[in-house]
Length: 136
Picture 1: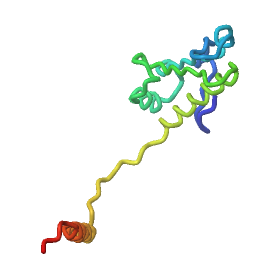
Picture 2: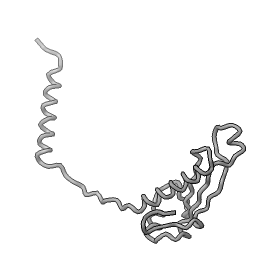
Picture 3: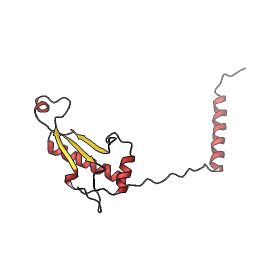
Picture 4: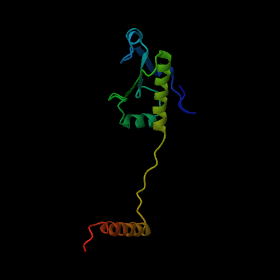
């Protein structure tokens, strides 16, 4: 599987097994194993250490405590489409780890924007005070 220009994963590292799908569907669900269970061991993989560390640091319910990514695909009726869907979801997860988030620099509002905000608040307050009962 191709993740990026420099990174590929061998098919032998990805364990895919067919299981029965859950939910409604009648006879088809009861007879056919159309859902796919994908398992990918992060620690035993050939991924670079950067990817492994970022994946293990993720707070994702698909990653177990042992460092195994488990993806269950049962969106489609055919096993082939579910297999493709599971592989695409694994690929998206690995690509998301590669993107480094920009660090947020805290900013302060300018003096002018603070003054404009306070002026608008006083104007709105005066408007609201005029809405009260009129005393003759």
